[in-house]
Amino acid sequence: MSDLYPLLMVPDFDPRPWGTRDLSPIYPNQRCEEKIGEAWLTGDACKVANGHLIGQPLAELSEKFGKELVGDAAVNAHQFPLLLKFLFPYEKLSVQVHPDDILAQASGMPNGKTECWYVAHAKPGAQVGLGLKTGTTREQFETSIRENRAEDLLNWIDVYAGDMIYVAGGTVHTLGPGSVIIETQQQSDTTYRLYDYGRPRELHLKDGLAAIKEQVPSGKVVKGNGSSLITAPYFSVDKYDLKQPRAFRTEDGSGKKSAQILVCVEGCASVEAGAAGPVTLAKGDAVVVPASLDEFKVVPQWQVEFLRAYVPGEKLPEPETRL
Image (cartoon, one colour):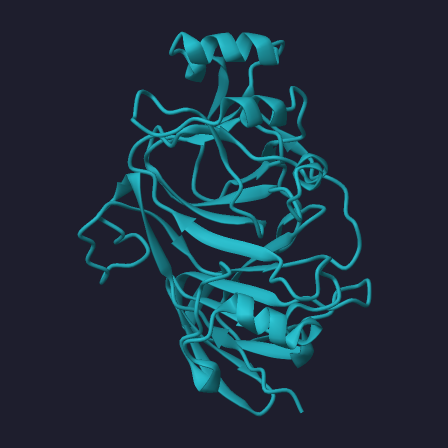
């Protein structure tokens, strides 16, 4: 019998110069002395907050339990496949790019970094920069960096609460202020900073310019039916707003299993699986349901709004998007 059970994760608050001390849209009781840009939920170093595995980091548990935890849908049975985090941009992020799998693996890294952003909150006028304007070449963009006008060559799009945005590896991108984002991504922190508005931080122009793709499938995801927010090659993300209990499985239609990551946006619920005791899922929390548990139930305490992210068991196409 497995020692695994639904794992409540401890948020890892990461200071960033573009962040904020006010995390009240998600963490009203969190007091911050530094500007916090990100709250990591399922990073390799993120630790368990409940049960007999309390204090153990996700990377060590993935190495120890393998497919029991991560499932057989993941490419690497001993690496937790998805990193989820909250982003709190108070100022513009640096203009950056992540490598795709091909470039990352050619450089000796296990994988690249494709991600998606769910807009949990957005003030009027909130925007993101996504991709280069049509017809812009890598050479023209490099010139704009050196002339301190790189942001002028980005596609700036308005964002609203409920939007889902797909950011394929090789996409030049940035976040403007005024939103709270839930990011789902491949488990990688490889970021090449291309432009930083004069902040005294290192740029990675050689690697970053090489990683840029001039044609990418990135953009706002065209909404489908039901609970699905996005289906993509590396992840699927669904959204639920429940007032009644609902059962879920860790196996999808392909017959393969994946760890399930539940992130609470509003409200509160308990997560129940087998003989394991219930785990409370409250606003800002993440619970990892190991793949080996087969079935689990989310029981709202009045009402709960949450995202559910997992690795699809078959290679899915890029999502339909628009700018």
